[in-house]
Length: 203
Ligand SMILES: Nc1ncnc2c1ncn2[C@@H]1O[C@H](COP(=O)(O)OP(=O)(O)OP(=O)(O)O)[C@@H](O)[C@H]1O
Image (cartoon, rainbow, N blue to C red; front, side, top):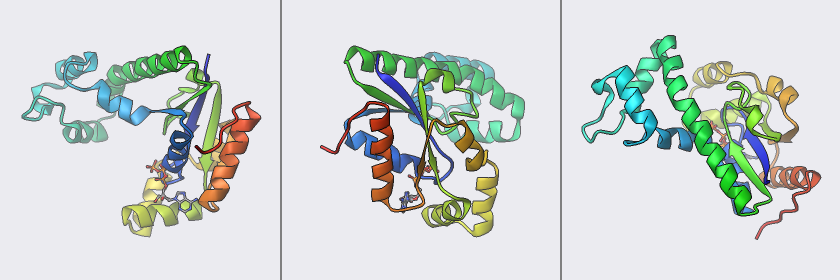
């Protein structure tokens, strides 16, 4: 069996940055957000279920699901959000399980599940180890403002809507402190993997 590691963080904490480092090490990284998008593609089991619940109005002209429209509906209606999650989440879990299976068959030492809401959505049962990409609030706000061209108030609102990273630190098996340079982050990543018996260097 491949070692299954869950990678998580908070908004603009550097999760994608770390995920790219892992990919550069030729480690398979499964992105839960990508899988969630693929799961609702035309012809997928979740697609029909969503239409049955939300109606034809949520379709684009080409028959694909209008994610923006669906997003607007669930943003204002909690019960609809739960309904959508009940349809999509099992499919995402299934897709991730298939990827784990495949990595194991290919004798890959390790596979990463990149799951933004790993702790919130209680998906830790799918992974053996968890890595949290941590930054302090100040760095998080600064990087978020810069990356998304946001005002401080907007950045604060987005950070405040999430579980604080300090809470996630308590739940993770390993924490990467991403306040420093990219090189320092890379070094920590390699050390964490080595601690779990995964010897990886850059190709
Ligand atoms: N160590 C670092 N030093 C400087 N900038 C960094 C560092 N790590 C990440 N960044 C920058 O901070 C921003 C957020 O990083 P990244 O996109 O990797 O975060 P994320 O956790 O994937 O965010 P989200 O989940 O919100 O998409 C990016 O603009 C990235 O280039």
